[in-house]
Length: 187
Length: 140
Ligand SMILES: Nc1nc2c(ncn2[C@@H]2O[C@H](COP(=O)(O)OP(=O)(O)O)[C@@H](O)[C@H]2O)c(=O)[nH]1
Ligand SMILES: [Mg+2]
Image (cartoon, rainbow over all chains, first blue to last red; front, side, top):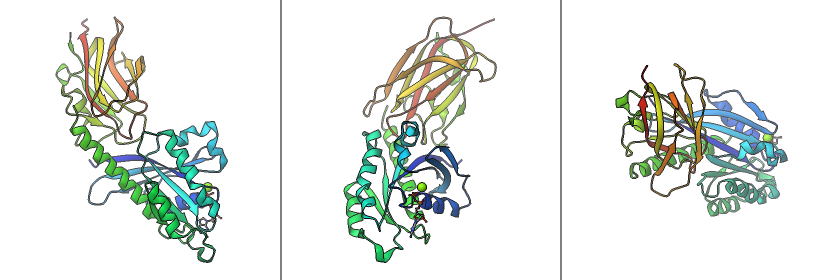
């Protein structure tokens, strides 16, 4: 039987950067998706299973999308618990959404300071060419200095949306394989 | 007393929430701590062990890795249902060595099924290497 790795990816970023749109586009294209449902005020979860190239294995993604400031309320702690990966999103046309990425990332990493949490940085709304305020270089530099992989997307034009999700799923799968190798050397 | 959780004593893993065929849950009760059952992501995780017959148990010995909070529950019913709390613990993190834990069980504890719940871990993935349980078969 193929192995199914399960991963919880949380999507963070300022309001209106396009988090929900990205989740929507990612999960609605394929045939393997479940209904979206609201877990509790301000958090939505969708699942999607994707295959890992050159293996029989797959990663079942539990994608948690957050809405607004509610995410900091106590009853939303389930959102922050044990993330397998993090997706930080900003809007290339709004400088402040980029500056706030640091804050979002800190919030994620502070929950499990000793845990390596793979992550991606998404520069969204690249279709807004004329209004772009954050350059690709600025985005890339931030990403690389924080151990994130950098992706440019347009949820509106459905451009490049799948890539960051597939990348993160593959990273998490690799992490599983690395851990298995460690376990073989213990006893 | 003997290891009532061993395959030789008729114990079986009847449920496990993670499945990688290369590392099956039977590895937990094969008597070796070199073979293991890894979880494949997310918490909580659990497995259920059914004994060969009703047992009286005295002590649980566990070797595992990166497990944080673990809960044991027992059932005396014929089917693995109606679980009741047995014991639980938050384990210390270890670095590149297995966690070895012993749980003393009050006298007169009878058990047909054991449910082991891994509530949380120190990593994305944790592993169970060896479970052995000192006890005796109940007769009559
Ligand atoms: N131009 C453009 N608009 C987008 C894009 N993605 C999302 N939007 C719009 O931005 C607004 C907020 O999107 P939403 O997904 O609700 O953002 P959220 O608050 O981060 O979940 C909506 O009006 C979307 O239609 C994009 O790639 N390009
Ligand atoms: Mg939203």
